[in-house]
Image (cartoon, rainbow, N blue to C red):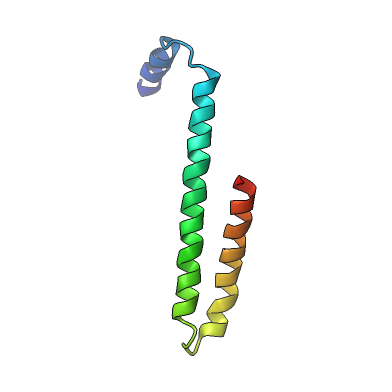
Length: 78
């Protein structure tokens, strides 16, 4: 029932230009890049914060893995 209403709603819509979709895609990429950059900064600050803890070396491997993944994601977006 709900899907039928949605299908009717979209079938009655006028066509949206490709430029509109390009703008949405570009805005999504910008927001995803900013979110990724912020997350990478948080991980880096967290690593600096816990450097003197006893279990730092145990945590460092997984944290560096996350930072590496975020750097790769940033490069893919650019």
